[in-house]
Amino acid sequence: VLGGVMALGKGATETSSAIQGMTRFLPEIDKAKAAQQLQSLAQQTVTPINQVGMAAQQFAPIFKHLGGQAAQDATFTATHAALMASKLDNIGLADSYRYLTAITQQYGLTADGLVHVFDQVTAAHDRLGAKVAFLLPAMAKSSGALLAARGTTSPEQTKNDQVALESL
Image (cartoon, rainbow, N blue to C red; front, side, top):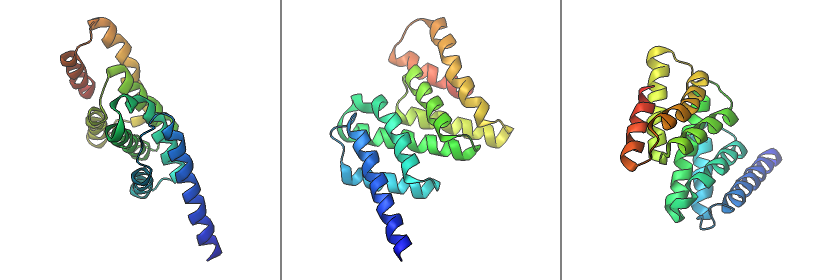
């Protein structure tokens, strides 16, 4: 019983710490909803809450420009993709969010756009046996060449980049 109480206390402390770290970039965060989102992702992906929180804190600065609930939801959507990528091919969580953060920033993707890209990575893994540990770094590194080749940024071009990225 004592061990269960201590584990519960540790989970609450880790949840609170993660939310506190996210408030730096998402000052309008709904703390109760964030706690539920952290715990839900931890259960869905069988990942310790401190690791879920660490991943969420990496995505918070990327989506802070959305403001309010949209920023919070986008952060947790991207966090879910990073957690699933780490589980898909047993790559480190730090590598997963590092590459997905780079892909998101370099291509200007939304959280939903990142999910679509991850779906393609999953399909390549399932159908072709492609290793996530090789795909994510290749996708992150290819953005520089693609962006340099086209030279402009527009919403339409960003959508085209996403299609090109998904086809890799």
